[in-house]
Image (cartoon, rainbow, N blue to C red; front, side, top):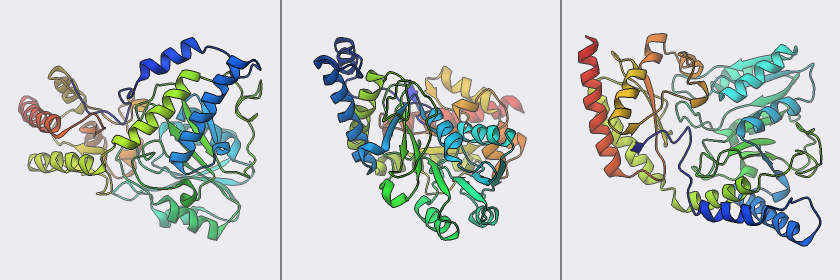
Length: 371
């Protein structure tokens, strides 16, 4: 199989077997006070420090969650300090961000969605038109999980601070973490969500960066784990895999190669009269609209030939609509003809050349059949 759906998940990397073995042998509850449990606690704190260092944060600013969806839910639910104020959210948010915003709207919060440019980036003019003295929370995704378009979060944050320094600013960093060179302090955000299984870690573990000094209430209460902010016995195997995967991904992610693979596929597909969604700042994600085909049928045909691609966010795969592609101007027919190809550290040019040849053949065959 040639796996080209890395934006949905990734193959576990590093010595996951060793991590699971450690978790099985050192099964003690990290909150217990005897020696063996304290050793497990120390392993968790070492993992926290590893992730914090890669993000450019202090380890006390990293809070482990069950996934990025939980991190986003936590940010929206507890990051909004003034329920009578308004919140501004980019139209390109992941489903977990969008649905969190809609949940706040159902509670009576004034929710404003900022439009997108044709290339998938946030329309900053519209964003700042919607921000005012009553805005208390803003969320702008760092890298779109649909188009791969990168937003300049550091610049956006500085502009927001100049308008209203009291606004709590969140960014979903799932598709950007470790793929781009940045320091969380330079971004200037208050809250930042990341996930393990997008970078080779196990599923079921994520984290929320909470800027030191920001008082945010717990989403889950109980025994007081995670500095009292997120209760529940820690997922030891998941946390250790997160740190190992992050270190492995950082060492092995070759941006130049990822860009080369993406450019090659674009150059080969363009003669087939396709449309590329997103901008050239996108690297690991390629969204393509192919006129005259049904993307779902193409996906199954490719799968039969050993090439696995996506149709967009896996979290929204049950719906024929695509909120983000619609926001950048695609109509329903174009959305139904759109695929998402996403590259990872396990891919190489040999795979991409083979996959592209198969893709071109299947597109032409499908178009012929549909005629």
